[in-house]
Length: 157
Image (cartoon, rainbow, N blue to C red; front, side, top):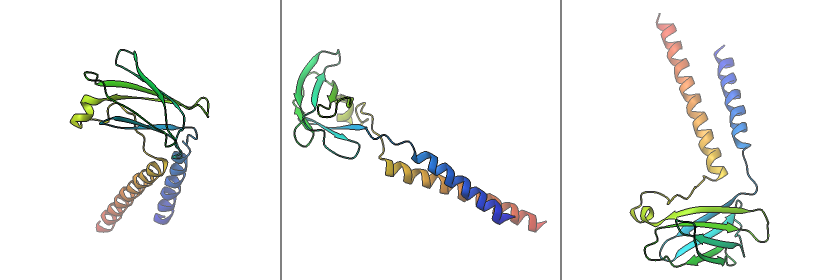
């Protein structure tokens, strides 16, 4: 009977792990930035640089600060304006219409190391998959420990 229960738990965990893998977005675009001269790096989900994309940088009030185009590596650099701590960056792919991404860069938070400056970061699919499997293996281990405790208690009586 214990073998059947272990098999049932393993089968359930396998099905659940397959369900978590299905949330894939093929048209995801990412933006990465660096400080000094602020560098924007735009790339698609597979790591392909977003070349010749239109970049628009706005201040906190929504006024356009600077506009340009990404280079062959999907990068665009601009100097920070003195007194301006927050920028909204919008990148639109020219060669693949409909692909657009935006982020907020907050220099005051990044200088202190407090956060990623409002930039939404997402773990890559392989990392989420590995983390999901680790979570499921942990649940399976907890279930097996509980079953072992019950068996030990049963034989002690």
